[in-house]
Image 1 (tube, helix red, strand yellow):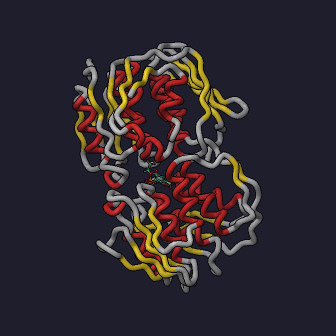
Image 2: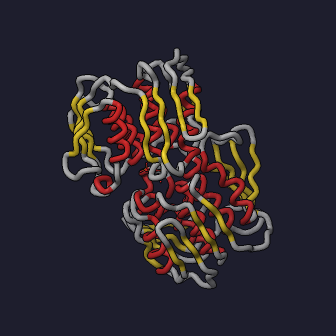
Image 3: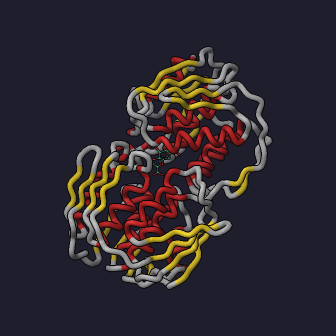
Length: 405
Ligand SMILES: O=C(O)C1=C[C@@H](OP(=O)(O)O)[C@@H](O)[C@H](O)C1
Ligand SMILES: C=C(OP(=O)(O)O)C(=O)O
């Protein structure tokens, strides 16, 4: 379904409750399957987390996780240690193009039995669950941190834990730290020094855990406030100042656009203050999921930006670098991309009623929505947002975005 967002002015003061972090939820759901005593609150209602829950409970041989990348990677490791269980793990057409070889090689090295069903290096895969015989392995760390998190999550159940040596530049480090912190929360001991991560055999102490709301989802409100009039404020819950989610770096990044964040007991209030518009240069190696949001904020505000550290964007839900270039150019922007960076020039005008293609990528739909604060815009296949934030459009309507089908 395509939707039209008419040029809108939002409420001066509003509040939004955002669902739990998809990243924290998918880790904790897996840990809960390993340690059923764990109780969870504020679990994400995203498609990806629902798919994760369903897959973990499934007794079928065929498990389809559609577009859910973390679920694909985490479940590969999970099913590899389910002794005696045979699983064919598959996904959407795009999932079959998202590489998994680094993880499969590492698991095989540890003793797992995994075969490719169609193309070498890509889903679908056939997994025969086994007890893993080894605990030390090296793997490339510059392609996706999800491979590393997948191995760490199952390590808590391995007799000798795990010792991972990470080769090359480590990408998306905050996501690895999130995995380690959540393991620590349930009593699993870990260490991460230089390029070696260890998970030690530990006595666990599972307890009730509350998932913090999703910071990547919050990014769209940072963008909205940045583009709104001075004085506009939005309160987002449930958030805390010391987050496990790397995307909480939004607080520091959006100061550049005059968005001041104040933490309350269970929420964060974003307020737009007057600021001078300056070009932006950022390395997003640690926060790849907010690249689209930031690029669109800069485009709408007419600020030039150089975003680097974007090498992982090409293997996400779509090639996000190409998608951003195509859609920003449709709106009248000038943007250059390489395989790992994006360079946006200052733009003066935004073309009206442009139809934004979303390429099965929730973040394309949500990142472009704030354009409606300046110009009418169409978002194609708007339902894609359910991958991480199913109530996104209702929440925008609640703060006075004018949205019609
Ligand atoms: O572990 C996670 O929850 C995630 C890790 C990141 O992936 P990469 O490590 O592949 O960049 C991120 O982009 C993704 O949305 C979620
Ligand atoms: C890249 C993402 O998700 P995944 O890799 O889990 O599909 C995302 O949510 O932006």
